[in-house]
Image 1 (cartoon, rainbow, N blue to C red):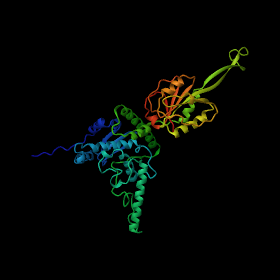
Image 2: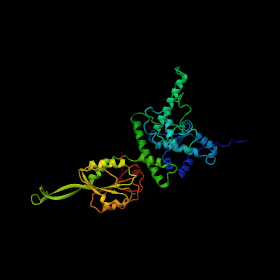
Image 3: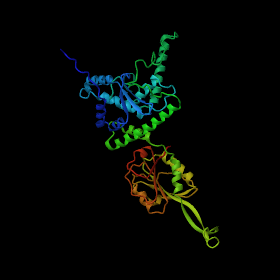
Image 4: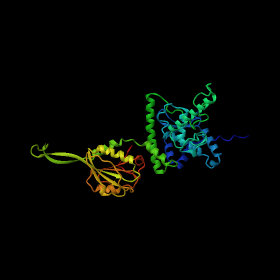
Length: 422
């Protein structure tokens, strides 16, 4: 009597554990996502549940098939689980890009949008995926540039479909044949997304909108915690450009102009002097009163290195001009040193234009030590944040920088760091 060999089973936990060693960022994100085996889903997919949580559905049979087919390829014979890892990363990228939570394009959920989102994601993990995926630069998408956004790929797909339909019209005349649903007789013949996208953007009414908002906030918190872990343990295969995008996606957008204005006004100190024109509240008509003249003197240290863009300098000086009515600015150009002959005072009400007067490296100790030796009420440093942490400032200090400097500074600080948007 012969017995059949037990049917192989797919253990998703084993594969997410493998991610822990190779992809710390994705592993940290994976731990915060519910996962459920589901044979009604042909491949795999992520969605938002009715409770505003994220759930990944996967078909165990499909995953086993991917392991088998991957192991049968010459380049992956020693790593049959590679495609499964790629599929998991693909699903997590759908969350990172907000494909599950943000609104759909004008045309709604379409096959074309499904393919466009897959193309955007697969640009980052081309070597990890099975050939059945929608991969830019390969197969029917050989002419598509790698690394574009989903919106950009959507436009390319629309152009592809339009060209195909025009070609059909020319070959078939005006008999009307060849027209049909999207993907039938169009430029999308034989193309489909790797995974299941059903459930994206579903639901109507206030309840559904609230659920999506809850999910978006939860996602932002999940990604933020995954970023914190990745900063300590490594990012794995996530490219530096993608890291910037991920960090930027969780950054709270701040109106830097309002914060700058508040900083300048808060730096104002009262200069008190006696005057008989003001009644002394404690000793009326016996002692002269006191008048307070509030004038802030704020140091503006300008990083002169070439990596600080002209656009950022222009936007910053334009805003300082509007604030010159509240304060007196001491402008301190610096690179690795401060040349006191180049320091000047921007008096209240004056108009100034920026100019680059030095072209060296960057050292934040130089302007900090100079400002510490002066009687000033505040210190603002305009820079790209690419230098070592400076000595402490005797007056309140704030940093103004670009997106990369705000999200990936060279050093950590508890002082306020603002991104200047131009």
